[in-house]
Length: 273
Image (cartoon, rainbow, N blue to C red; front, side):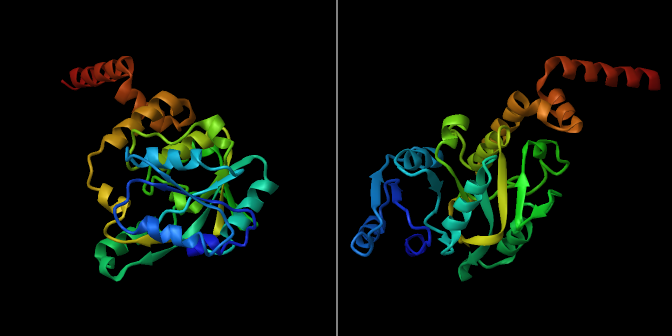
C-alpha cells in the first residue's frame, strides 16, 4: 500500500479485491483511507480461484489503465507513470511490463530459491528481440521463436510487473478462471495474437519470494494447467507456431496425422526386416 500511494502518477484509485481474508488485511487497508486523498475501494469476493479474483478486481476498476499489485510485491515510485507513458507513446503496444528485482525472505533463501532466481531472473534471456530506448517489443512472431516453449515459459512477467489499457479486456477477454498456475501467460498469448507487448528494461517492481506465496504453493499441483495449455496451442495457435512445434502438436492431437506417422513407423520396421 505504501508503494502504491507513493506513485508519482497523479490520477490513481486503489481497488482491493478481498478473497475472504482471515487476517488483519482489511483493517490495515482501511487505516490508509485517512492517510491519503487517493480513493481506496474494498470489494469482497467469494473465493473461486485466482482468476476469478483477478477478474472481480478489474471489473470494479474505473480507470483507463489497470496496474496489478499483489500483496507480496512493491512498486517503485515512477512505475505507473513510466508505464503509462509507454502506452501513450505507442498505440500498437497494448500491454507493458518491466524487469523486476527480488525480495527474498531469509527463511526462504536456500539452494532451491537460488536455483529459481537463476532460472527466472531474466524472463526474456532466450529471446533475440532488439532493445531500443530501453524497451524490448514482443509481437506474435514470438510463437515461432525456437525458445518459445523453453523455460521460462512465461516470457513477459508476473502480473505485478504489468500495466495495460482497460479496453484491452474488451478485445482479448478476461483471465481464464479454470487455470491455477499459468493464467497470466495464457492471457499474454491472447494479447500477442493481436498486439505488441513492451518490456521495459528498468526494474520497476520488486517481486517478493517466500514459502507461502501462490507460486510456491501451486508448483506441486497436478499438471492440469499444462494439459489445457497444450490443447489451446493446438486449437488456437497451431499455424502461428514454427514447423517443428506444429508437427509436434499435430502428432499429439490430430488422429489422421498420428495414423500416418504410425503407418510410416510400421513401414520402416518392415523395410528393416
